Length: 262
Image 1: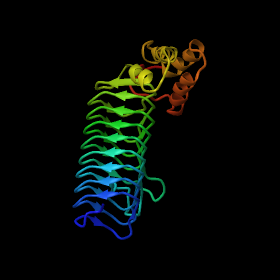
Image 2: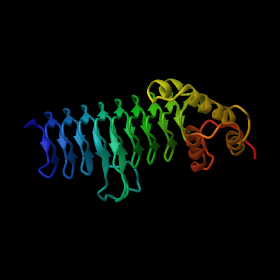
Image 3: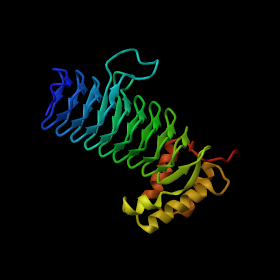
């Protein structure tokens, strides 16, 4: 159902069984997947593709022009995966370059008044609480939960199945499987409830994760030395490799690590 009171550009590609409510705006060069629902006063801006079963609530703007002086007006892009919910007054900016763009994964939930900046990459099954702010080029791996009013600075990378507590500011890289909290940000433990109940991790896997992070955050040593200790003390496993690989790819720069020294 497309209301005659909605604006839908003739060049928009509309899938099957789509509902577009009165006063919604669907721009040119957009793709709206099957079974999507666009609520009143929501806007889907050119360069945006919505997957199947996406619901966009009142006042949200998906694919808004980038808020970055480096964008020179070229056509850029934004993609939203299947089954994602975008609540009221969310703003998702497109990319700033003609290649690449902003991506929101499948089965995500973006709560009201949140902002996803240009060229950010949000993995599947992520939750962004009310008033979350992602600056440009932020990467969230799968299963990340950001509680209300979390602020993530440009270029930060948050590892999979991580929980960041409300109001925390992230200006670095957060390794996988942890809970981060406070300002300045600090390690708050392993995200064990989510890992066990929702991701199917065993108690042995969770203990290995906890052991690894004790070396990183609770031994007053450098990240470099902590990784050496993890390799010696924690049996080889996928979860151990996930932690080591993430930190090495982050060039040993991780949030909440306060040791200063060689």
